[in-house]
Length: 362
Ligand code: SF4
Image 1 (tube, rainbow, N blue to C red):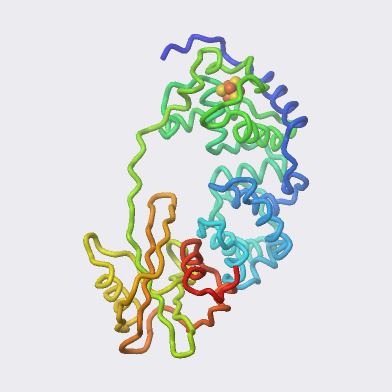
Image 2 (image 1 turned 180 degrees about the vertical axis):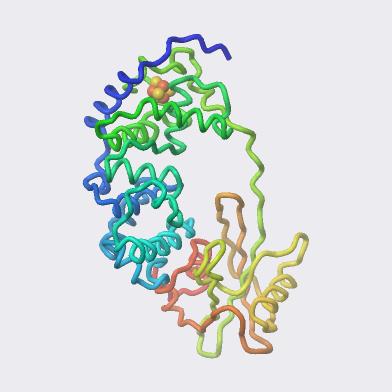
């Protein structure tokens, strides 16, 4: 690609962009505050998640856990329940853990030093930059995927934004743009532009405040940028679940290990099939290993599909009977169908619970 176009003027970019942000920014609940706790919660929720989805979760979370102390004191199960269906549960486990550390080491106040905040669980460079610039007014950059896309177009960058060296260059560009006065406003303006105007597939260049400075627009390259590395195929996993009832109609459920994907959420007994394994045989094998019991695998009940960041699953549930043994191993319980709604489940497990248990309220 030939990219002979005049280079954007940093001061003008900053002035035009923040002026546009003041006039056009979306009215979002975390934008009315400089409370570092509220900004932290919003930034964690917004990772991989759409703004419209986050708003009600954010309001509920802040109402229930208004500060680090209340969050740290709440049992993890209660916090997971408020987070249910927002996905990426490592985020909420880290929030809970970090709140405990903030209470213990910083008296409940979120630290305002880069090295200290970055050491807290779940806080990476982007989140640290967002909190420090927005809540504490520090001149720190906050570069996420939206910002990388905007910068790669603005400067018509010819390298893949997936490369570490390109990401470093983008950070350097943003650092040259960030103003001394209200850097948080500038960071938010850049993110907002990426979210509502310089969108991945069809950037709204005719309404963009930076259209005069944008090299990609001048060179007709907006549809080609940002350049990306090759995408890997997303693997698919076959997951099976046993729906086992006792004589009173209660359902056997088991809690996932604290560490790992969907940690501490509840589920039906079961797990991932080996390649080529038949579902009935595989399910009996998995439940034997997981809970030390023998089950009879009966009829098919329901199947749901779900996509995680790095893989997809098909979760198939079978009606099963407990034939031998007493459940052991991971925490487990017999739950009344109505109780299932009170406990935190993943999205796929919740769908199965609702499909197999008509008495469960929706
Ligand atoms: S002019 Fe178009 S490509 Fe350039 S920053 Fe604006 S929206 Fe993005």
